[in-house]
Amino acid sequence: AQSVAQPEDQVNVAEGNPLTVKCTYSVSGNPYLFWYVQYPNRGLQFLLKYITGDNLVKGSYGFEAEFNKSQTSFHLKKPSALVSDSALYFCAVRDAAEAGTALIFGKGTTLSVSS
Amino acid sequence: DADVTQTPRNRITKTGKRIMLECSQTKGHDRMYWYRQDPGLGLRLIYYSFDVKDINKGEISDGYSVSRQAQAKFSLSLESAIPNQTALYFCATSVRGTGSVNTGELFFGEGSRLTVL
Image 1 (cartoon, one colour):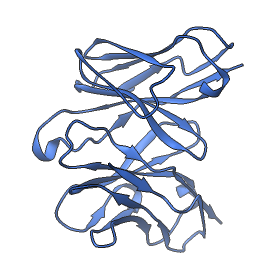
Image 2: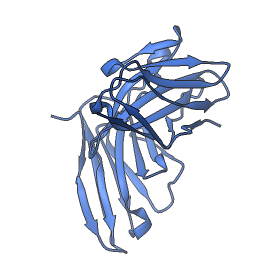
Image 3: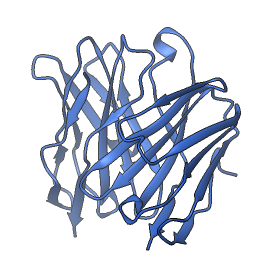
Image 4: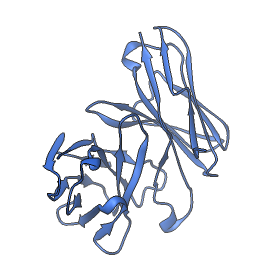
């Protein structure tokens, strides 16, 4: 079975500071991993994905994520947070071998960036 | 124009009423999905369809039904709405592809907010 966990309901950072939003996953085989962002009253927007290759993945709006197979983690990071980064962030996973399944999402982490 | 369009965007209805949420897409994707979002619970999969003749139940299909009228259209129905079906509903699509193309990456609509009184 596939699962994903986001251990923090909320992350608070000051503008200009680095931010990390945590995600851990569980799949039987190799994972496909995704981060999505949701702004108020909007749909989910794709940020980045890990499929294979380099463990450090760069995405939209200056975000990046690091795939760590031994820790089964895919934490989202940004070197310098902006107030406009405040939103709800979702991690999602799919087992690469399970082509007939859909993405499984975490419960989401609210990021609040203060000025 | 949006690639994945959901209608209605907002609906208030009463317990026991039948309600249909519609989704259409211009992305040419084969696969379509319905998710439900509740605060603190994230997104949960209701139904998904990999082509017109293929419908699959997701994690929380009870109380819902779907229809894949065409490759580009996928509707979600609540036959007899109840208050705990109050939620934000998302339609999404993905490309079938093969190998590295078939990652399951989803493209979302803007959501349909349903309130059941």
